[in-house]
Image (cartoon, rainbow, N blue to C red):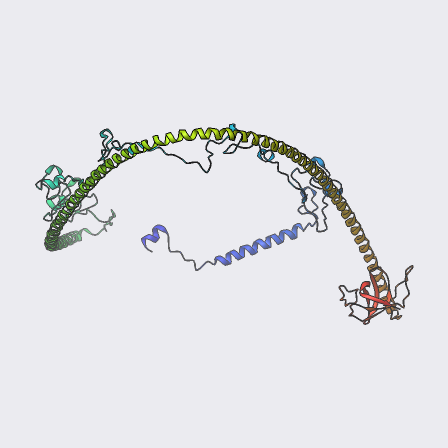
Length: 607
């Protein structure tokens, strides 16, 4: 048995246990105990939970009902009394009538606006007569909006500020002309290449990046304390730092002390004559034991020294291998740094070439801009020359316009003289025209009186028309009320017919049940007679009061398929004999050797 098994217990095996068999045996034992308890106590069917058949009344379920339970639901008020019901078009409970309920013949009348009732009044506008409601923004189609000119359009000597503005107090500080060329100030590092940002090559030592290192940098790792001085080290078997020595570590030079127990063998009693020989023998044995122990210790010391020597040689070989690896790694780093330096030199050369190209391109662009600026100045001078010519032309035209106006004044004076002569003639004609106007006014007054008469007649006609419309409205209202009354009566008549139909169906159902009962009695009687040996070929029923004879036959008009066991089937033109008219709609007869019921309206009687 191992130490782990002694401490934590021996190895377990589950092969000797069958958990399923144990579980099955426990279940079987529980069932046997329950069965035994029932046999001892006995089963009491009178006890149980409440319900329809429970005998423990205190536990009976109040809501438990049987399959034959039929719930009775109270009818609504509208089902109990058809005269009462919800409000609506046909409701008679006026206090519950729905105000928004309207029939299909309802015609909504929208009240006219004031402007539709009297055309003399209306909203304001171009033609509105109610000045207090006139829309200020309403204008006619002939309205022409006049927009005031801006100050810069009235007087060209004034205008907004800008490059060409003459109002210097309003000049826009950010307004620049097309010949403006923005000059961007160079950075400090572009002005003087002796100064620059800090870094590996920066000369401003106060801005040097502490983490920036050149390709020639070689990181030196600090050695551990145990690598600096081999006389000191961590505690252990060979450690010389006594404060860190491991308490459980022992050297090979330490004695292990006595090994074994304090048991002492009993010395046998021997005669005194052999004591000297025994003593010398034991002393020789002790000397031999000491010599063997000394040889064994020397051998162990030699082995430890040999091991220490081999360990030192191994450590020296490892150190040489590490140094060789570091030299190889340094060599690779040196090659990598040289490659990086060559790459940086190539990038700097490419950057210099790119900057020279960019500088040439900028010079060409500046030359093009200067040429464009000269071209724009030439165009501006040409435009100013054209403006000057235009101004001179305008002055010449104004002078000509002034002379033309002088001539027009002279002509106007002549025309004024002629006008005065014509005025005298017009005055004479005006007097004659006034007389004609007086006659025209009298004629217009006569026409106005005639129009007034026509207007009065039109008002009378409108009043008559309004009265006629009111009468038609009243007549339509009476007709609507009459239709509502007729609909109500039709509704009541329909309800009465439905009630009669329901009663008739109930009566037919009752007759059908009576007929089925009689058929069952007749069938039982016939079977009883057959059992007694008295057979009869006709379907015998006791004659009813007022019934026809048994010799009635009929021919089928339509085909009929039996829907129940006590009915017969037939096709058109089949003969049905021995007919018994037991009911108004259903008869009993024989067809194709079968007796049963059939509908009376499917056959035609023949005697």
